[in-house]
Amino acid sequence: MANNLDNFALEVVGKNWLVSELLKAGFQTAVPSYDKGIDLIAFRPPNKNEMLKAVPLQLKVSKNEVFSLNSKYSECRGLLLVYIWHTLGPHTECFALRYNEAFKIMQERGYTRTASWKVEGEYTTNKPSAELKKTLKLYKCGPNRWARLFKTS
Image (cartoon, rainbow, N blue to C red; front, side):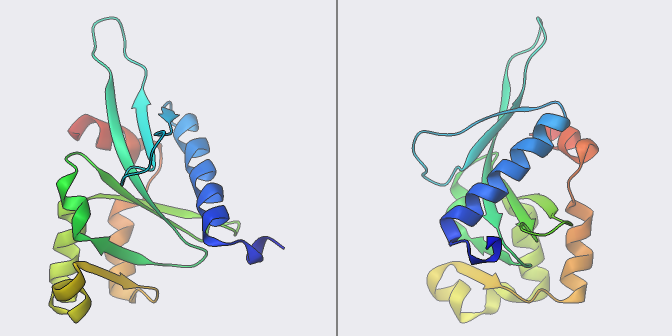
């Protein structure tokens, strides 16, 4: 039954999985009342002498493995693109990249030379190569990765 989820339901499952992971890593989340490119906001409650630091997240949730980028996300400073793979399985994986990191990967793989990128400003592959998967492993999320991302945002 779970494999029959539509895209909206799949995104809800992925978002809730991510919220759980962020909570375990010591972060809190908020959902924007209107989705205009930001699906979730993650933050760590500040100490007395700190200001609140929040990070906007754009989620890319998939039952399988999908890597995509849309040029419209270049406009949101500080946005993290969060790719959640195998959302319905027991081995869900998550990768978080800044736009410039994802764009660099796109350039290195030649994806920015595709017609879809040149014309539409977007690219998607639902069959990432072994080389692309190896590169994305550098951005795999866990408690330490989330902490590093917050320090540099």
